[in-house]
Image (cartoon, rainbow over all chains, first blue to last red; front, side):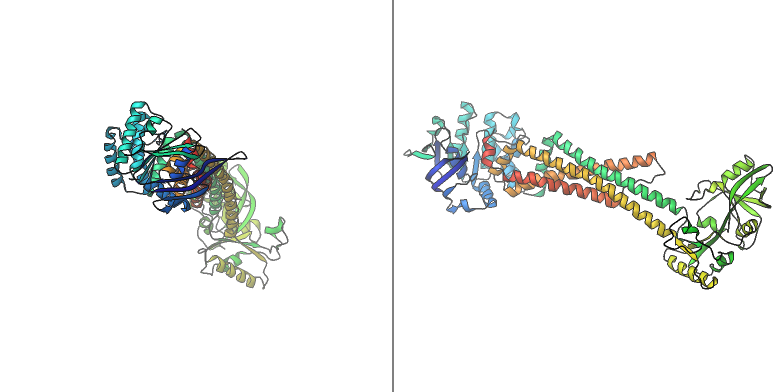
Length: 226
Length: 402
């Protein structure tokens, strides 16, 4: 599913070069539940951004579904992000002027789906997330947990193969955090490849496979026997 | 992404930032309104002057005695040297052409006009009945000169309204006998006051038959002959006919000057068109300033909306789509601004027309189209840079912020 080989990512800070990712090689099969942990600055977010095609590696090879995606044009990368990858962020990143339903439909709008189909799909997913009565509320009228559920709905409405979550519970209290984790774990059980970046060990330990990163390198890579 | 979705999205984001959108609309609409109002002033000035000329008559050819040389650009240009007089017979000879509709020989002099004990020195115009139609004058009372043969010295006169007031006061002037010089004339009509044409104050003249004027001033020569061609196309043949006829009558010598009113009019038309273009150009500067303002505000808007742009990228918007969205915002703002500006401009030029009814202010169609066109163009041109910047934004940086 995801095949990373010798991935490097260099940042220039002043006249110094910083190795955010240093020769990372990683193989993630479809349907995996993977958590990436490590202190801040260890490169875990950068790795996630490269997997999500928001960032391009300085060197290395990245195959997604056996396709070399680093060579794609911007248009093709955007299409891949739209169709195979879903993002969930720590700060939700909902568009404040749009209602929950409109936020969820945004990827469908970008994909050019007709309004009728957009409506059917978003109604269905709102119901699945238990947000039907919140459909026409704007983000500032929703609780944190509800906002993150809207964000998850938006990330999964295009039925992506991979769901990338960057500290999805970092801005939530324990109860709603657990709720959110349970929702995305359910999605994983239905077959989606789930990658969570977190520095909360309690969350990270729930994953079947755990990666610890330090200084842009993968330190440990353990898979719990099922 | 369909056009309706793009429009929905951009309208939503414009509504989301009301003050910013209103300011940009204001700038754009002021620019467009400036173009509309200034060109309508220029166009009004042009129409006013051409209108003034039209009251002199249309398709007119004026024959002056003497040949004006291009070198002699002094006061003598229109008067010239007169080796041979322009006579009433010359004028009558010109009536034999189908290209000429009306013809009015004119002789001019000055004489004392008196009624009872009142006397006044006024300009005397000797002419024929056609003059009324040629000059587009109208009568306040009575009739104009009778349509007799031009060489008939009928003792009748038509007086201007001011002459009437000064000689007769409140009494009726029609049918009264006045003394002009050493002759007596019966007043048959009074000219209406609105007939005011350049060079002649209709209120202060007395018009008598041309033959009577020649007798009165004891001179056979005419001041000029005014010819009205049948239509615009007939002007050139009429000039040719006049030239050849007069040359034959003047022993083969071309000793008259022929000028057309349309040529003078066309010159004024060109001058005022150039004027209108100039003010339109100046007003366009304010449109460009509005464009720069839009660019500035959009650039600020983009830094405020980096998260939104980053998010759009993360959920699959391409650079092209983001560029389209932002360009569309600029275009919609310009379009709405242009429409509001048109409304303001039309209201402004209507108001000018309301304050000065005699001044025919009104923007020409080309100015309206140009104003809207330039508004859209500046909006799109100055919207391109911010839109490109938004499209190139690094999504990782954009999303790392709250």
